[in-house]
Image (cartoon, rainbow, N blue to C red; front, side):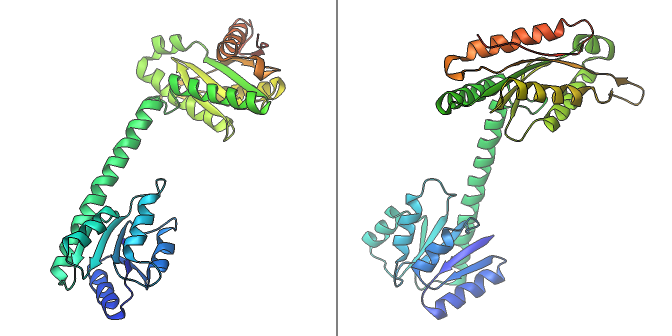
Length: 306
């Protein structure tokens, strides 16, 4: 774990550095408050900082105040060192945003105990952040395929349509449906169907651009949002998706390889500012219906947005 030591007094600074290095910490040293602030603004800034209260240029309490004014940066746990032992001074330090404090002089055991407490709090905080991020993923992603779920891809489409309307740029929408998927489930079983969906997802993801968005719209249906694409570009994207699916059978076990195709419907409004979500999705869905009705499919068809 990386720890910042900000202490202007050389003997104290070297003593702290020696203790922390001995205990296995990676130490970053600053000789005054301004240098400490520069370190804490870096992308890989230490998550734990030991700040002396009294330093030239910028006091430790001022560094702490600046840290707490930043809402968009990772939290830094601050252990304040001070010779002040008046209750009012300690209250001032805590109100400035310090998490803990040590009154000089202190011994190594005190310092170690306070560092361990800070590390425990940072570890718990990281666990909470990880749990929050996991919940966000669960709320927005399909558990089987890992794609955006229905609600999330719908929200992405809404935002992209609003952006296209503001900037007067084009927007393509592709609705896709794996052909004969019910037959695959009936013939090979649902575990095989799940394996087909996962492999189909992998192939589709390999065929989209980094700034396109793809979601599982429902069952074996997928929705692809293609920013900046007119109808011709969206059709080209849909053809790439079709080719990625049908390039080779999908092996579900050592004895079964399932040929797979996909039908796709495309729409791209000529005037996005005159369109809405319902008309976009209706046009893409009707185009998909046309594609599924082609006798010698699979097919890619387009419909204008009403």
